[in-house]
Amino acid sequence: MKLSTRARYALRMMLDMSRHQEDGLPVSLKEISERTRISNKYLEQLVIALKNRGLIRAVSGRGGGYFLAREPQKIKIGEIVEASIGQISIVECVGDPDLCMLSDSCECRLIWSLINKRIRNVLAEFSLADLSDRKLLAGVRKQLADDEPAGGTIRPGRRA
Image 1 (tube, rainbow, N blue to C red):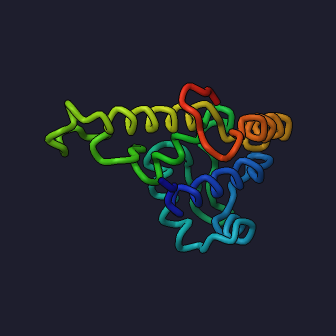
Image 2: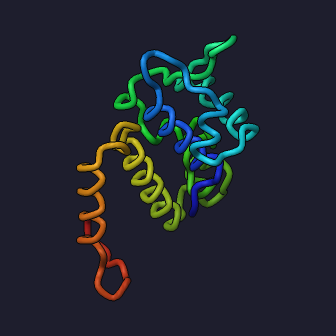
């Protein structure tokens, strides 16, 4: 599974806004585009979804732009991802069991559901502010390095 460009760009956009929203002034899409190298047209599409989910708000007119609707520590990464691409579901039957006739008895669906739940939990654990916290990120890097399984295989029962 991989996250879409839309989800990755929405997160980059929101992170840029959180870092450059100063003195109560809105951040323009042009500025965000220049810093993130995401086209202005793409950002315009993302803005619609993020506004609809209440993650950003707009100020029109001269000197207008966008603000985060809440403080960065109150905006979870999962909210941004789901605002941009919809509910996270690694396979269709996890989000909608009625799509598969075997969903009630499918052993594989149990694993897909567990993976999906863990992905959503991680994305709900971290906020936009966390991505700017160098100490926290250093701790995550260390944890990832420490959790590297020997031989490149993942052993069941091992907790990350």
